Image (cartoon, rainbow, N blue to C red):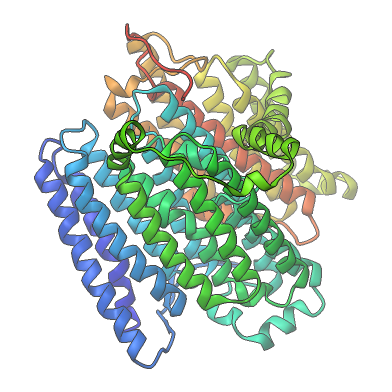
Length: 622
């Protein structure tokens, strides 16, 4: 029975690969492939759910599947099933099957029909990995799959400007959550001296033994986990990305931002509840931020003119309440609330196209406004102030840009004097010198050796900031983003010696993907004449194969789960000591900005309106 859990991972994985092999023009085969596998998954899920519900209610854990081992580091996959997984599986299997059935007709003759079903199956694979995961490392694999699936579905209408722009914006916030997850794994690895399963986290004796003299370490891990959950579930101050995500097709909006993906943050908090249960400050923080989110998003939802935006903010308000319930320890209530909210929001989004036509008819023939609302009890100045703030969505987007992204761009713009030749000459020269010192460390003084990891890590940050801010040359931005990983590896090598197997695991995938990606950009420049980053070029319209290969290269460089660099990033952090917060921070910042720079290159070169289009395009949504 323990190994039987893998069937819930294998079914969507098999469906995804079969979907890739089916030709794009065969809509019936694509939809029936999803029907069949999602239907089988639904039946098995419900049978297993009711067996668990009316059986012994015993938690199940599968044997560990070892992926990589090194001295002081282990990376394994582990899956489990308990009450929390049961509820998420019950809801997810039903909604995914319903959305699959709905999508067959909704997207009929849509040019991206095959892409949609491929991505939905890929998302469902990630969702099942997350809910069945029995340790943080396994969960992070599904976490990343959900993130890239979200980006691809928001940018589904890739010949339009706004969906692509909003997809990049959403991915940029997801990267913040991803690195919070990595930082939590890094510190947890040091705290427990290895990878811990969630089943072990439920053992109070083990937790008390490790947290007794490491209280602040426990708080740090909890806050990092909380940041990841906040971003994924759109909690304050990360609320503003939700309506932007509605640029994708209605079925993907329903399953992602109405029900399943947006509630994964709640799942993470429920899964790690035994760890932070006795940290009163963390529980207060969760409750306060949940309440702030509920109040703000309720007001914003009441002034939205778009039905999808109304549903998005209403869903965030309910998720804020669920966070409060989790903080208070009401696990069963939170699970019940999640199920109700997921079913309701999915229904509302799927019927939203019809509701629009009904409301237009009612507006002309049978419209009667409410006689009195709750705002009428407020003083006029407060009522008007709240109205303006909610109309502007509390300026959360502006604040995010002003105090986070724009400062990073300004720093990168200070390096505009760098060209591709200058960058290669300078950085390769310094890197070679660093390698010479690495192999002859005996000539270095103790103080010099102590500060070299910080120096090379800072150079990596500068490199990737220049890549992120580059507005002209795509090949320069790509080269700098790839070089950043080599700077990180060099910095960590001075901190703690890396074995050849460890360095190869991290850098081999990055190097191969970097070379192929650079060749793709060079070829596109030869064929199309321009790959500048000052506009969207939309080259996937004429060069879909180049777009696919380059996307795979982007995933390889940014540390996606299908690549060696994914394990390598976790491995690199294991060589940063617990007291080296600045080094960990620099490395985390490099990884955040590196992922943003890479996905921005892909979006600018291959997505958006085609550069040679003669048709007008919208640059601002209603």
